[in-house]
Image 1: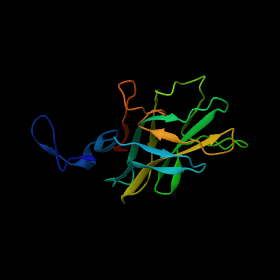
Image 2 (image 1 turned 135 degrees about the vertical axis):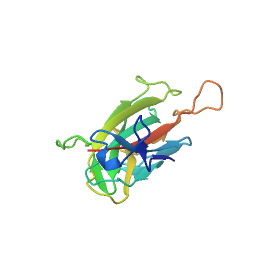
Image 3 (image 1 turned 180 degrees about the vertical axis):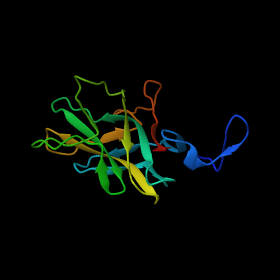
Length: 187
């Protein structure tokens, strides 16, 4: 995790400027984490992706937090059944940044489907999203990424983070990274 904080700012003349006088839209701090290891889950309920959780303490209750999420993943391939992967974001225990509920559809931040027709066994899907959140607090806030799967076969088919489904130990298969970055923006 990286943190960028400033106790004081200086104008071009070298005079210190208080954070409260900086105005709106200024970046006040940045924290980021990079997940380099792999993760898998076959759960049909949303599950935390280990290593994609990050806390930030806003300097003002009027600040916004800009989230940037980038995930590399793959889905278990089946010759007869498509498999589905879903992601959502949380602020503490509150789900944020998902679509509206509509019948049996799964509200999510982003989702995908795959089968042998759509993706070879050595590929990863790269997905990213940005979201502006208003936590309205100066207490520590934790943001995290969760994932779940679904399959037409009715049984769990794993989603794989930072690796391909096949993940063979040779030069044809890659490993990726996933990141979560939080940027406090002055209101």
